[in-house]
Length: 449
Image 1: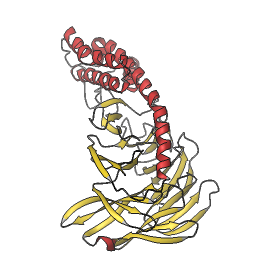
Image 2: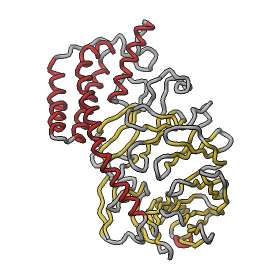
Image 3: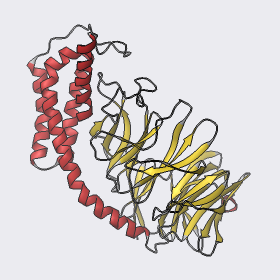
């Protein structure tokens, strides 16, 4: 909310001066004409004492994470006051304190993010080395901690990126992207990921309504991608000014329905659905000329980010981004590359049965790892979210009915022999950095060998 919301306030104020109309007219909520309530200095003093003073002391101790949470709470409290006031009245009473707190939040946020950059770079490097290891099991001690906020987890599992309702009654968009503490659910800060140029016809094609979905961290955790009104955007530097990676759709029937980061964080693959067919494209994360790959409904990058595997009509095709050449790999409905790109794990579905196979890209030989025959008590099962945890260890979510109860379970499969074992009930969200951590929908699992 911080910088983006403040810019929006002044944009709304400017619109009122030009048109002579209240900036709140026609927005569904009308604050103009509301009778202002008398506000005592005690209210402002209360916000300063409960939130701002605490945040200042945390910032002085260089606890910028805690300072962000406290400053954001102060801004949220100020925004709630807008429910009882018109814009001009709110600015007269709360504007000065808001700008002061907003500036402090932006400073603490900048210091917090700067401190994490070196940490994230080291963590990502160790994470990549862990994936190249020969680990073939998740045996040993397992402990867990609950996650109070669902969304895209940071590499270390402490922060969650998620779309949340805006606390500002003045904002055009009722959604923002927020950064939350995973263990407590507290909000560190938020921002409206809508470009400053709000009158751009590409942005306002569907009117002044901004639908944001699915923010996902880049592999190194330094930026995130999300969809905005069907377009794919990347917040590249934390400024709140997104980069449009894919073109804005021409109609409501055309959407970028899914996207995937490349492991090096420099590219994005995405599926465009025009209502008649689905096509996979890719582009640089910084935005450039998008490249069409082929018809398809799913895609994934190779670990070195040089190839894209595309699923089309239950067939897997490999595409080289350097040469543009394609190669048919065989049948499959979902796939994943091993960390060294020597194998591709493929899920094949046929009728009510399925199999999970490993395809050796050099020898062009398939090895069966698991199948529906191994789960006879698990009816209607289908594996998904297949993920290589290491060179010799694969994990996947298995959903179906067991004993009349609908369940989802996380299973691990060792390579090359294909031994399988259940890890936990739940759905696999992502494999985090070292020490070995696996996130489900509701908890974070820690493994020790």
